[in-house]
Image (tube, rainbow, N blue to C red; front, side):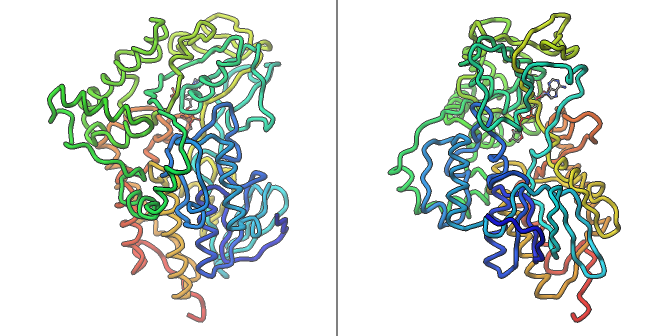
Length: 519
Ligand code: NA7
């Protein structure tokens, strides 16, 4: 493993997840001198930190992997939705093959990046004292870097074990015989609740907005099954996934709206889709559910019938699967669960509705909620992240005008869907831009304020047409108090995203172009 204190390269990549690894691999192949700073002690992105009980990916194999042939030809998954240990092993395998670590420093957290317009280069510093100079600074920091901890009263005085899902101790936490509370009901909370409730003496799940969670339908994958698919992986990962809306090449529904089907046909279609498991029920559903409240309700009513049948306790049933939708279908990211509802139904698991029983404060022994003192040994905050822009806010990035870039990037949306596919599309665009800059001796590019605003306005217009605007989701930045409420996801799909970026490249539309002196 490299431990360079000072590096001088063409491209500095920050973040060693799928995006960072793919970027290093592609840039090396194009003859760029590239180096990686990673904040944790290993490659893996979210999978370096996601070690909470039951942590596993919600996107299914074979879509959730890099499209690099030498990797997918030599790697075999054991499960349709791999767990965090398998994902860490995958990144070890990636490193063994590509030797990313040769050009990487770990435990290197960027806290300052300044751009010198005279020479067109960045100087990047880390908390640990590393310095890099580079022409291109490529942030592959993902959407879930900066944790969100709501400002509850008394958090500091709690004497028990307090954990945020994103910083789990490597050696784990033994919940046997313990009283555990899990705050939140996002994708992370579901996984923790269904796992920790198997060990805990008592588990309390505190739910503000119930998750419209979907069954995972986890299963083991055999070597033979995957080997027979290997010959198609190039097409699946490079063509089909990229041609889909969000990186999941599922078949589209036979018609565009459920209202075009008879009730029996609709029921059969939804049943089949639901039965496939995972994101099939979202990414493979009628597109109209994003726009039409009636269609959104049809799909919710199907879901609620299925889910209520899994919960015997009537009070828990009404909290976790209420007859009235908590939000439009897909306006918040659906969690993918295995036996979450069955575990919540157990007698030693208590479900608290935070709308009627709000957390008043933390105490030395636990929590006070709805006037009740609740003693607890462990409190887990599965309260999410300052998604997307949160990572930039810790890096002190100053752009061409010396202003913190966060101010300008706060509106930067990213695409919505299957992580590896999306980041590969983005990296490919960036690499092609860097090649063109090299060929044309461009010192630096700067997006014009007009072009940046037009991009943001266009996305805001698209977003307004959907039901996604209506929920207080992290898609909208609405989960973090004080954060500007606006759509942070790109809603036109991957194909339009890529085309829009590439259309600007031939003439550098929307950019101020500064050439090298000898150009
Ligand atoms: P999420 O999806 O942001 O979920 C956070 C949960 O925490 C959610 O249920 C929130 O309820 C809850 N929350 C947040 N603040 C509070 C307060 N103040 N009081 C009570 N409950 C609160 O984060 P995850 O870690 O589950 O998932 C991260 C995603 O990022 C994951 O899907 C990855 O794909 C990417 P709310 O819904 O706001 O009422």
